[in-house]
Length: 619
Image (cartoon, rainbow, N blue to C red; front, side, top):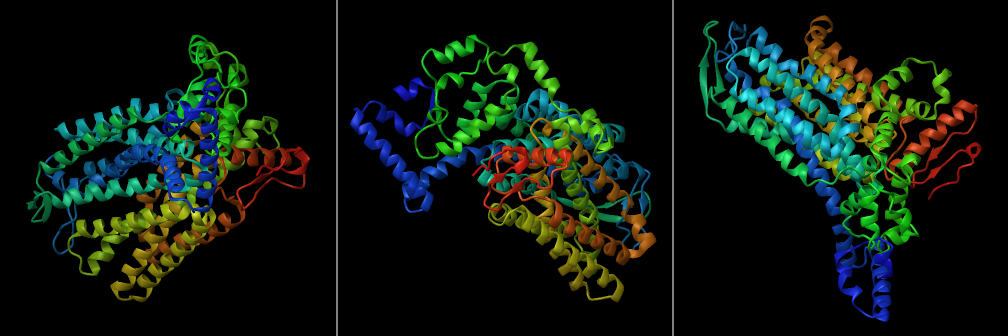
């Protein structure tokens, strides 16, 4: 009862203990601590089950948010089964290909429709910084992404003209552009440090699941040979009404995202940044599988005070959480939340101060000044901006490496490779490619928290570089098509093991909480812009350099990326977001002072500040 009066987190299993006498309570507490010790060594099945129950809410939250990533992937893959059915139905003035079966049917408007989603996504991603800061991470999914993307898909399903389809495609792009920054940030801020890599990789797994789902749905719909008015071209395409059915399915997926987002806990970090520490602690308890027991009268008094800091009334920080032996980890997370609360809101919260706190967040304009200002300029004295420069540069560079190693070009090349190998059904070939990527991404989810981010990135870049060189050799020496198929599978597997999921997973890990919304939006916009650029110039590169020269260029980018990751990118596996932020802040402070020794992130997951900062090592 005394613990409840202090406002602690208790598991539902402890409710019967509260009614027992003091001696029984003490015995029960010792037993719980013993259970935790056994769980740490893996010797007690009941304790292991309890620990598993602790992480299930965070896993469920990540999977719920990843529905948005599934919608993202569905959008990317939609044009493959839908466009052939749209040709001659909505898009006219067709141009037939010159190959034997004249299966390559295009039009200017349909090509624009396929690529314009990237423009909408860049707009949505860039606007995402403000949305994430104002609406919250969960709020962005519930109040912006689901309605915007859902409206775009309903509009697509009901469209009668190519102009309507183009406009709807831009709207859908804006929705998925915001998804691509909101989902990684939400997962990073809600996942336990020891599971954050695997859960963050679920984002990319869900993207590939969305692509596989729309490809599979397209293959399952009835097909018919279509003859177009540009000549004798006849292709197998889904029924003319099939592309509308696929659009309705996407609208239903957006509705599912909205329904699930209603039950998701908001990011504790975002709540704390807004000065709502009581709400942040309640959200953290929900995500860690513990039940908050508010102190009598104190909760009501806090509510009357507009969300005052009832944690300060709880006495010892450790007593705020339950005594199952995990309170060390939970207390660390609580301490990180308390440090995120602006000092002006520590004792009292008002709407005016909340707006001030929101304005205090780093904006895209601040990032622009950060990018173009010299390292020793005025911004070097602004701790928040100076400490953002290095992680922001790393996040952007990882996205550049991800795109300029040629993943989109390789996927486009896959159709030709599979065709030469005798796979006549290109839809089936594309489905096989995406299933390979899905399985490999699932393996990455299991490995990332065991092997670490940097080792997987290095393995990924090494494998992709070798595969690109093999593709160049295939084109140069006219090897058998099986060589190209092997190179294709190896490249996609390498991408899915590292660069695919980890660039997105590390983006919110690297960025400090004050800049996370705006910086994630800019980094995501860079990714979409690079994807659009590679897509548009790939054909021109092949014409100017030949396929072999193009893939050798991708291999060269992979070599540069390998050495960049090996020498510059820190290992973030097992580190709390707070530790990573302090690491970059101390490095920035050391550079500003000209100190010779920088901060370190040690392999065992601890953080050590440079001696000049006076910071102590944190285990």
